[in-house]
Figure 1 (spheres, rainbow, N blue to C red):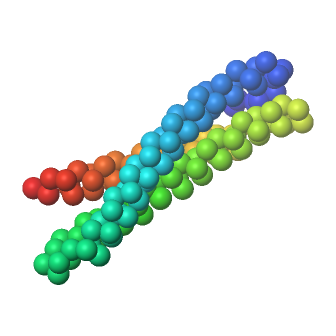
Figure 2 (figure 1 turned 90 degrees about the vertical axis):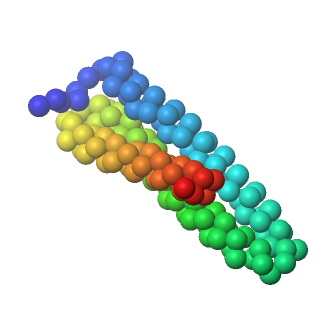
Figure 3 (figure 1 turned 90 degrees about the horizontal axis):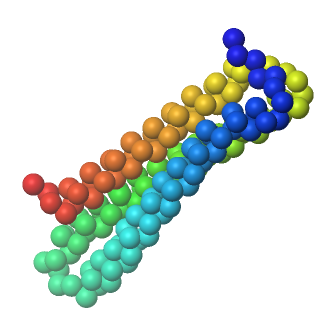
Length: 142
């Protein structure tokens, strides 16, 4: 059983991996934010188009707006999962230092936090992949 009783330099070494994970999560959240911005821009454009389009085009525009809405919901879910992952990683890093300062073995809670963070990250990337599939399908529906 791993016991996290160490000097501060060792705890910093343990925290480096999760810190890199935070950088990856931040990059992923930036990508998702940019994708959501593009979806929002397109949604506003298509709503304007619908207002000036003749009735024969309304169904086509409504279908695209529905797809854009689905994409936005999936992106929002991915961003929520990614943000939760980042918070869990921060809690994990903080608990490493807190356990070291208090001189307690905190290995199991750290392991649980890590597994939970990984599950949230897997969810984030899975949702991002789903959103990419939805976007691709809307571009080329065949």
